[in-house]
Image (cartoon, rainbow, N blue to C red):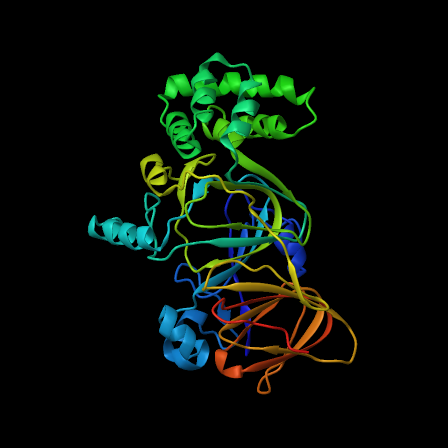
Amino acid sequence: MELLTGAIRPYAWGSRTAIAALQGRKMPSDTPEAELWLGAHPADSSTLEDGRSLEDAIAADPSTMLGEESLGRFGPRLPYLLKVLAAEQPLSLQAHPDLAQAAEGFERENAAGVPLGSPERNYVDASHKPELLCAVSDFEALCGFRDPRVAADVIERLDVRGLDSIVAVLRQDDPGQGLREAVTTLLTLPAGHRDDLVGQAVNAAARLADIDDGDDYAMVVDLGKRYPGDAGCVVALLLHHVHLRPGEAIYMPAGNLHAYLNGVGVELMAASDNVLRGGLTRKHIDVPELLRVLRFEVLDDPRVAAVEDAPGVAEWPVPIDEFRLSRVTLDGGSHQRQLPVNGPTVVLCWTGQVHLDDGVAPVTLRPGQAAFVAAAAGTLYVSGFGEIYRAGLGLAPDRTGH
């Protein structure tokens, strides 16, 4: 086990206070700090105390670092990436490919000679990117398609004639086809027509926001101010508008359209950075590729309920082999909690002061600090006070012991 130093990604939508406050640094930070990456993704691997990147350390001794189960299932790579996500502004309207789509897209762009660092690149690796986000502040997000009939009612209230055809297709008998036609139409509108139609929709939403108890229309107004003429402002009304409180979580499988709007969360995903964008951004947008990977189906509920495995231990179970996220709350008593290590593990301290002991190289974590625990450790003893988030494999039951 070693202390792990994460990489901070300075995307424009990031907060200048959230990650700095977590790590006890001066605020505001000089640049936006959007994500803290804790993992071994080649784009920005974390580093160990001895100066090696986690990626290089795993490559040097994959059996010890990953364990035979992870190595056999996922190869010589850490299969997940843990992040702190701090959104001061909305992220792009986006989706992620499934495993087959990612492999094909990565090979296709390599064959076409698109440089890995190119802003025009969609696929920077061959992995899928299902993701789980647990809110640690109030968190607002657009997550997956809701019932198209509900979306039709919301859009109809705008009373914008140019959207009548969208309302009609959303009310057809086949909900998947209705969603496909609506999204495709909106995201492929000619620029001049799109600017006018989105402007009318945002103005109508502003009138309704003043008299309506719901916040869908206020959300459209905010997006319209940030991204004038962007069709994503209307597509947003097709998605679940979710408000999370601390401790609540959402899960986004491959192919689900989403956009995180604001807030701070701990996010765990398969180790990928493949993003297909359709709007609400000044980054590269590839509508045809996004439409190719989208799943035009209703997501009944993006929320994931926490399961209490033991007193003070919460887990958010998701149907994915690459990862599992749990939160352990320690009360400062003398009792050590015994945690089994069933594979490569990353521990992030959120509050307090937590002592980790793998029997070889104990470490003490304070807020914003993290440690990597090699699979060979077998067992981790935890004591102190505060909260830690633990990322591990999803392959086998990972119970808390006692």
